[in-house]
Image (tube, rainbow, N blue to C red; front, side):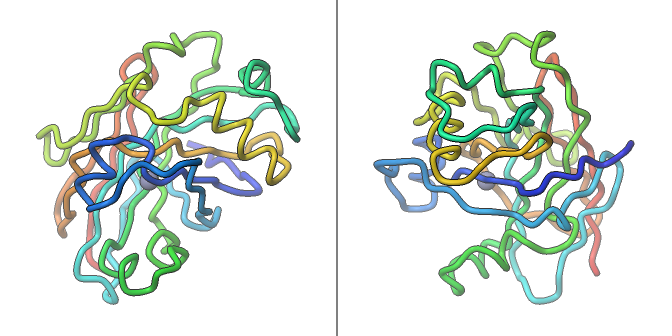
Length: 206
Ligand code: ZN
């Protein structure tokens, strides 16, 4: 598959209550955003490579939104008009480095740390019924629904586009539900959005 070439990948931290709690955090008062570099993208079937610097690399299955039109200061009620489609995404994270660095750029930014599946156009998905499931070696580890998000997709687009101009092709990873767990050499990790698609990646050591 052709990889998307976004100018940026904007991610949202702690957007599901149970996930925030499992890492010892509460829900933020406003969306907590960070960036992953476009160089971290890989497609379906590509390997997630575990870097030797980390002892604990975890999956984060997420619903990704792909922007269709330049968006700047977009009000939430109009936000869906700026979306091209939806894709499954894995916000792979070196959890130990996230804690020790404080800043998340290294923990979230290694090459291969952003598997993304094929985008499905917005008009062919039920935007209010979106769910995300993450499996490791066929076993379900995470399952979340859009209705469980602390900040909805339109609220996220409004907030983020008030900070930075979103360009066509930019990706927003909308946060991960509870159940993050470590990945090991030889695992197969899958993130599926039922009715949209799946991104499936083998995990290997560097
Ligand atoms: Zn995430």
